[in-house]
Image (cartoon, rainbow, N blue to C red; front, side, top):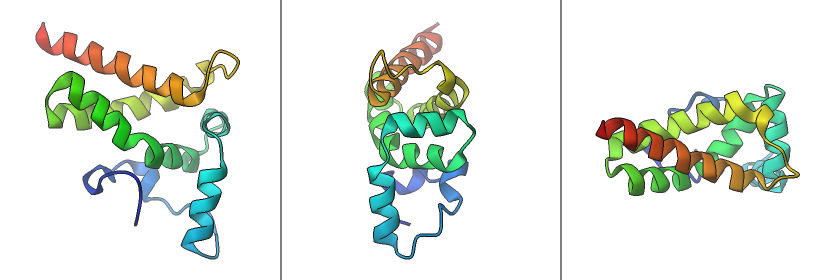
Length: 123
């Protein structure tokens, strides 16, 4: 499986599921790339696990980098990526596309959750 996420992060449950019935890997990849983050968040809100997998493919690496810079511990950062995506699923209904982009909402979430974890670890 070729994805934007590092190999060791592919344990997120939604990623291991098959995603649709595209006739080729290229078509499936183009289809996933064409869907906006805002549409994917709406689908997540509706319970679409495939949408979570697509967001994971897009953002797992970025969230790992953010968490690594803040937490300075790879194990903690990997756990944080999982926690961020769990939070995205749980809080998708609070995303408001009129206030900003889906990417911005998720990146801010990654920062805030990572700083909260660091604060908790330092206490």
